[in-house]
Image 1 (cartoon, one colour):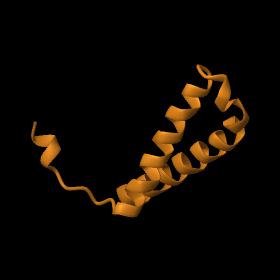
Image 2 (image 1 turned 90 degrees about the vertical axis):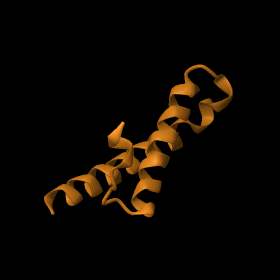
Image 3 (image 1 turned 90 degrees about the horizontal axis):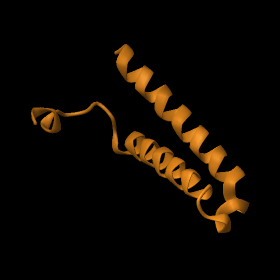
Length: 65
């Protein structure tokens, strides 16, 4: 598994944004299974979309170098 040893051009802050995007998407998926989180669904959608959009922007920016 040599792909685990490769270095990335992403900074810790950029990876943090990506991780939060994935994390909030997971919580959003859990909202459909648990009615207690139903009130937070709009906030989670917004957070997920913003984080994923920022991660995509950083990814495209890094690939253009």
